[in-house]
Image (cartoon, rainbow, N blue to C red):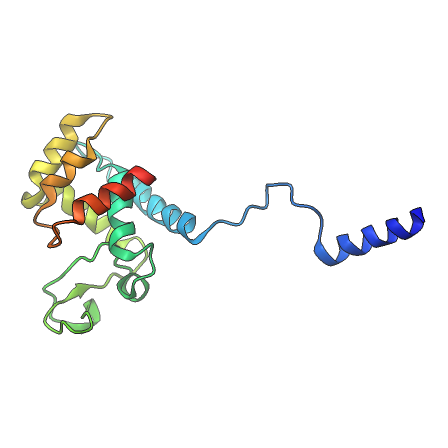
Length: 172
């Protein structure tokens, strides 16, 4: 009888593999997306060491998650654009157009970190975001994201956008 249970147990191990130890955790697509954006964020600041303040990772993650639907949107898959960034480029290899909006040009980036680097630089240097940048700089280690998002009104058209992004940030 013991031999029978031993044989059954051995067959189960062979067929199913050994029991999980917890170290072979398979990341979810959401975890993979957050990891990608985080790596790109870190690489930006590794390359750009002379800056007045860091754009918070939570803000970058929240906006990229919302704008790209966790990296599932067509623009993120085909153009590595995780932020819905638009362009005035004339060469079609540098932009895509949304279905039903042929006059809108959404920027395409050459690699997976391109839009992350561009977005951080945009928020850090573009005059339209100077109030946001100054608010972040003055906030120090704690950023009131609800207030920070009020300084991004040139970025969005949907009046519910700040609340949606804030909910994502709070859920990180």
